[in-house]
Length: 138
Picture 1 (cartoon, helix red, strand yellow):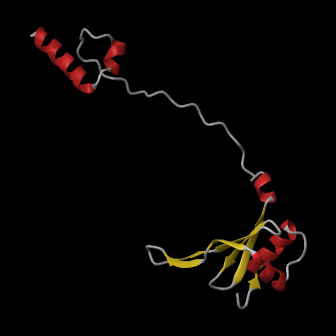
Picture 2: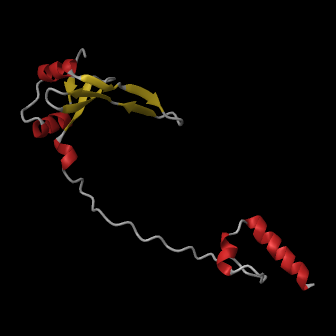
Picture 3: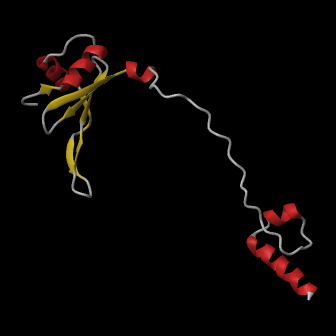
């Protein structure tokens, strides 16, 4: 990292999650001691708009993950272990009960197979039973 800059968001999050005000030298030191989790890339989407993937560095010394924009050489944000335990502001709700299927099989022809068995038979067997009973009626 030649000229590393710290974003305002990074400085605020560092102060919240690490505890002191960050300096460029300290952040650069932690970045050199950290493990690269994901490399940064500058990509293009299918419609031609730019998309940037941030590099993620895990620093076990201070137990944080730092997100760095490698194109602009800017530290963007910092994640800590405290974030995993806090609620994310969304309510936990129960999944709604599954609605029963309203579509029922159409029984146009009566055959000798009971109704519960009729729905469990494969389609070919049901068609054969209906054709057999339909032919017997004529």
